[in-house]
Structures are given as C-alpha cells and as structure tokens.
Length: 336
Length: 269
Image 1: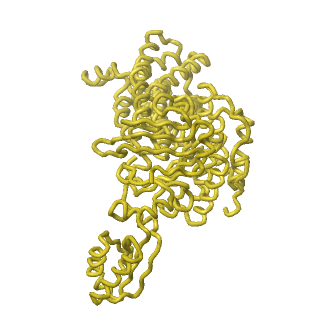
Image 2: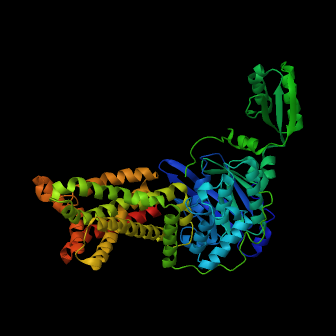
Image 3: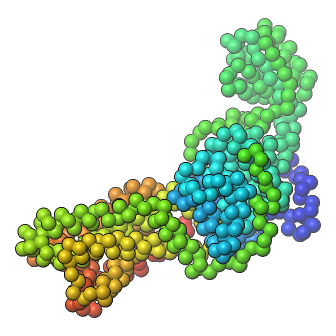
C-alpha cells in the first residue's frame, strides 16, 4: 500500500518538485534508545499528512529533526526542496512549527508576542503591528490582544500559537499534537483552521495520538511505532489492508470471555482485542464466511452471545492489527 | 470559536519582507526585554531588595564598628555593594533563559531563520537594562544617605560602564546554567552556590588586612575584589588603568571561555 499515489500530488508533480517533505532513512538515537530507526516519508505539497503513533513512538523526534531543532544521526531529508543537513537556514525560512506546548512568552500580551515574531521575520514596526492585528482578528483573539498570555485559556493559547506560525505563509506547517489537552469544542476549532490552511495550499504535517484526528483530517496517515514506520496510506487503505472487517462480539456471561477469546483466536487465526471495559471482543475476520464460522464455534461451545456485529475496523483496531498490541494513549514520556 | 473565519487574513498575501539583519534581530529581543520590565515591574523589587537591605544594615548596624563612623563606612561600602548587585542580578538572564527553554519558546526561536545568537544578545540587552536600573536606584539611595563620589558624574558614568562589563561577564555563567537546567529556581540556587563565596570573601564589606593570612591571600586574588577596587577608584577618581584592566580580566575570560560553550550547548541536541 506504500506505493499508492494520492490524487492531490498530481498538480504538484507538474511543478517538478512533487514533495513538500521527502525523508530517507532518517535515524536519531538518544543514548541507547533509537527514537527514530530509519524512516522514509514523502509528503505531497498541499496535503494534510498525519503521523500517528502512541507516546514514545518517535513522532516528536521526527518533527524536531524536520524543523531543524535536532540533527539526525543518519539519513537525509529535504523540506520544500531545501536539504535539511546542508541548508538548515533555508529550511527554517520555509517552515513553521507549532510544538506540543504553546511556545509563547507568557509575560507579554498576545499582540506583543505576534509583533515580536513579525519583527524577527523582518517586518518593520508598523507592518509588524498590522500583521499582528490581522492575525488576532482572524483567530478571534482581538478582545484578548492586550492581555498577558498567562491569562489565556488553553484554547486561546493554542490559537495564538498557530497564529504565531502564520506570520509569513509557511510552505510546511508542523503541528505537534495540535489538539492535545483541548476540550472538544476547541479541538473542532483547531481542526477547522487546519483544513482551511491546507485548502490555501499549506502543506501540513501533524502528529497525533488521536486516531479520530488522523481519520478526520489527514489525506494520508503514516503509523509509527518504536521509531519505525509500520504502515502508510489513506485511512481507507489502512483499514482495508487489515481485512474486510472486524467482528465484534459481546457475551451474555462475561465469566466466559477467556474461553470465547481462545475459540475466536483458534477459528480465525488472529489475535483478539478486548474493549477497554473488557466486555467486548474484537477480531479481524477475513470474510463474512469466516466470521460466521467463528460465531458458530462460540455457540457450539455453549457460549451465549448478547450481541455481535461486523464493521470496518477503527484506526485503533488497525493499530492493534499492525503491532499486535493496543494503542497506548497514556504511557509517559515522548522521547524528544 | 465555531465561527473562526479563516480567509486570506489568516494567511498573508503580502510579499515576505526581506530577511532582517543580525542587529535587527538582536534589537527585537532587546525590545522584548524592555517589555518584560513593563509587564513584570515586581522584578524591580527582586533586583534591589537585597542590596538595599545590605546597604542599610551594613551602614547603620556595622558601619560604625567597622570604619569608625557610618558615613566613612558608606563611602567605603557603596561601590562594593554596586558590584554585588550586578553580580547577583546577572542570575536573571539565566533564569529567563531556563524559563524560555522549559516553555518551548526557544524551540520556536531556533526554528526561525534568524541570527542564531540573537536570543542571547537579547538576554544581554535585558541585563544591561537591569544592571543600569538597579545600579541607579542603589546609587541614589547612597547619595541620599550621604555617599559622595569624588570623581562626580564622570566617575559615575565610568563606574556604570565597568559594572555593565562585569554583569556581561558573570551573565555567561548563568546562561550556561540556564541552558543546562530546565528549572529556573535551580539555576538560581546552583548559581549562588558559586557566587556567594566570591562575593563575601572579597573586599566589598571589609578590608582584607584584618583577615587570617590564608583568607587574605584568597581575598586579594578574588576577581570580585579587583572589581570592587577598580570601582572605588573610578568613583573617587583615583583608579589606575592597571586596576581597571585587572577588574576586566575575569569578565573577559568568562566571555572568551563560556561563549563557545553556550554556542555548543545551543546547537547540540
């Protein structure tokens, strides 16, 4: 599935530089830990591309390398046609980064933060102020423009943080977990911004540990685990690569979950995942026929079902099928 | 939130401005330091509280015993307390750096196409501002209490230039610590562990002749003593160029030795 070319790449290919980001064999070690263990990646221009993986998978490390904040131990990459190693300053001119934590000066006002960055980009005093006011208006922060950032809510900080990345229009915008810690409403707002930016032609590389986020936003998704890319494709491709569907089974008697799990594993020859509450079993079923046989085997063993269904796998299940382990959302410490 | 309108205003249609000069970058960071002063005026309190207490305590409580009269002691002590003020206050750029690093702000700076040392130049600009303001306040208190610099305004200006050079030098120590340590309070504690013995085992408060021989041997070689001697000389108009050069030796060495370390720490990772 790695070979499938997205539709969006066609127009960019005509310009001769098909990819906004092109990565080959990128590797980074921290002591004995291989944070990145040889990643290949091609991100077409103008696309929203998601890097999906649990904490510690290497997502943040990848972004930090591509944003020139750390040097790779091995491999190469180009961003908007500029070589990461030989011309980092040109890469910096073509990108913007919104990190995991709002990178703002808490003591200054929102407006002063933007003016400072606009001046660092080379705007004169008056033009810097004008650009800051424009951004504050676009991000609905005009009312809070003259308040210190330390008084901002999480959603406001995130908006200001993204605004700070758009002083000049970047070729590539890196968003490291753009909605982590936001409430659902603020998350929707950020999603809307990200989509609008991509429509304007900005290439967006975002990391997320939210499966729904990758599914909702990204045209392509790379799944990363322990520093390696374990799959890449559209959300649909990833799901279909796993098999035609997932069989979900709920038992009338939860005492018999272990027994049911054993039977499903034997009949379908695939590992079984339990839902978070432990009341439901999910397993890849290659075909409806196979699913049927599995259900028959459960009934034959005298296990009563309270419910069952066939469905497309969620990305959660995709991750499980690819790695053989559930996606851990709350392990600590992203290697950075 | 639901109505966030992301039209052209979100993205700029205007042409990118030309890349600014290194000086323009540094000035922007300097402007930031000034803004910080405006928004956090409380830091003024931190800057002058300790030297103010020291000035009053030593002048009125110990002064008579140490120098025969409080006015004689103030005349001796005030230049020294200015040195102490600057050396202690150079901790703030390190703490600010540590804060920027822990908040991720430095990551943003590093991802911008700017002169890579301009954030440090900004810290230095903040330092100059802090040293000047704190120094002027302490000097004013001294003048009110009866301190009289014999060399007048010239002496004061020369003294402040030396003070800024001293602050610039000691600032490197804290910038290195700020780059290494992500908790601002720890930067302060560790920094003061080094600075305290240097400041107190010096000729700031008393003349070293009364100390035991081994301590006197240290005190007369202590760079802080050289700084204090030179500052007394500049204020009274008796300074020799040798004294001033000796005072500048430590700041110059710190700059030469630590600025490459700062660069290396900044670029690694």
